[in-house]
Image (cartoon, rainbow, N blue to C red):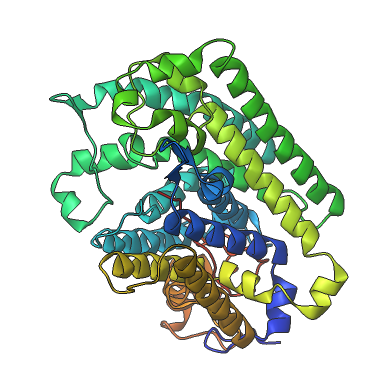
Length: 443
């Protein structure tokens, strides 16, 4: 039977059969959590005027972005046709993501956009696609342990005139005029150092090779991930409180520039972690330390397992009550891009009177409505469609078919490879022809 042509919409039944619904649900939840972190304040004054973390920051800051990155690695492992055989396709779709990020970098917006680093992460993970499960496990462990130390040691070397070699803004096209600074920012000194964040992608690649449809594996993800997160936070407490790490950091020059006591609990974006070895002992979100990577990776794995279990509940499956969330999780590159643009518009005064919870509710409703509409019609998101075309251009079978038939489409549909290696994070098995996800982190 001939394969369905890419231009034909896929029915909801076909999509449901070919995708791991729990992966889309987890990604959709991460998207909504990320919106909450972007729209609502991270810190707010208490009755005494002292800045304290908000509940949204305590719950979601750092974890939503880590979940996206882990799920991207998971998607590279899904399907019967491994991503290793579609490496050029993965690289081309990653380029699409990076280009979108560079375009968003031109906006004036108080959001640290991750798409450029996200695209680079996919390029960096390509050599690991051929590794076996045991080798991946060893690599993930080594990366979580050693990469934060390497970055910590490299940061003091990237200081010129007393200032760190970094952009200080989201990467954009103009930054190619200073390639050294751009490279340093993306890899080491910026908001999302690729050398540290690669741990999430490698972990997802390893998790994705498990038998994710098995209940025992799903339960293991929940309890194993939660145990890792608890271990990281417990270790942080032991190092920071009884051993004096917290007080040591509050004595650094950074404490006079930032509300460091509150930020150590929710978000270290923008804080230069130099001058004290105790920076390596914190598990603060966006610190990039071993304990941060461990606790955010653990929470990401636990959330994935929980949503995989949730998707098994028969009443939920029959009523399809979570289809809007899953649909949003299947087109997060488009929705994230729209979200960032809408925030920039609001910050420029485009939505007077719509702030805080009202603005967040609007973004969530639009995302869920779009997810439901596109999923019901079997459509890809606009940017997912572009990413899919880029992925197909790099498919070995597509190139082989083009050479053998003068560039004509095969009448049997050959040339439409599995998208298990989709850098947009498909969450599907091979042959579904659906793209999915992109990720991002909060302020």
